[in-house]
Structure formats: C-alpha cells, structure tokens
Image (cartoon, rainbow, N blue to C red; front, side):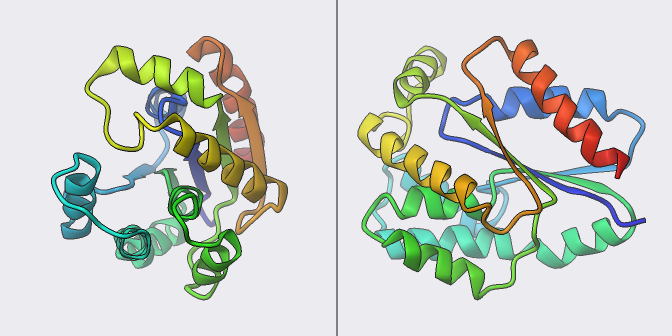
Length: 202
C-alpha cells in the first residue's frame, strides 16, 4: 500500500515545528520520515540560510530556484519511501517557495507555472496553519533573533495572502485544509490529528 505525503505550511511562527512534534508522537509505531525545508545540511539550504541571516543578498528569482532545487533533490527518495508504504511529513514544500518568493516581485501565476512544469510529487494533504502576521511577529520576537522574513510584517501579510490563494485553488495537492493556528498547540493539534487520522484510514 502506497504511503501518504503530508505537508505542513504557514507563515513564520504558525507553529509548524510544534505540530510536527505532536504528529510524530501520534504516529509512533508507524514508518514515518520527515523532510524540512530549507534543508540546512544541503548546499542549497546553506546558501538560503546565509541569505535569511542577511550574510548575502539574492534576488527573488535566485531565491526561487534555490528553494526549488533544495526540494527537488529529495523527490526520488521520497517517492521510493512512499512506494514502500511510509508516511512522509514535509515541514514546508514548494508552496512556501511560491508564497514567499512571489511576495517579492515574481508574479504569482508565474511562480505557479514554474512549479507545475517541474512535476513535483503531489501531497495527499496540505495543512495550512493560518495566523495573522502580527501574531507571527509577537511569537517570533519572544523566541529568538528574527531572520529577514520573520521581522517583515508587511512581507508576511503578502505571503499569507499567497497561501490562502493556493489553498483556495487546491494547488498541487489531494486536499488542502486551513487550520486556525491562533489557539493553544493542543487545541490546534486536535484539529490537525482529525484530518491526519481520516487520511490514514483511506
């Protein structure tokens, strides 16, 4: 039986990492793999990290292709794991590439078109953890020194709009679900768990 591909998306501070931890506990005993993007261990991820920390500058198109390459390098491996019946969890995917980089000058339709031509694997479920940019800023301000995306509330507003567009268009996924991520992590997880449990029954 083919495994399921599940993706967590949302602007910075939406709680993806927390929910990922709770999902892994819930799925204990199953074969599960996790891929996080950007992947800090990859050459592409390291360049992205340097950009986010303001150590280097990159234009929007260069950013787009770097994020896309970082994700593309794992596609064959993920496909193999799904074929072996594993569940694969993604902390960000090509949806982030569109949402963020198409907030910086690349037309939204162009970003969608570029991703569509690449035949990326199609997630069975995308969970969009939705919060307001102001909430993101408050959360991140408490946590650590913010990167260039996290400190830019105006950018995050555009990113959120792009995510909501992708969700509305049900872009490149079996199912999109918008989850209100403004509550306590346990309350948000109650909703998340319901959708994952339903998917795993199929």
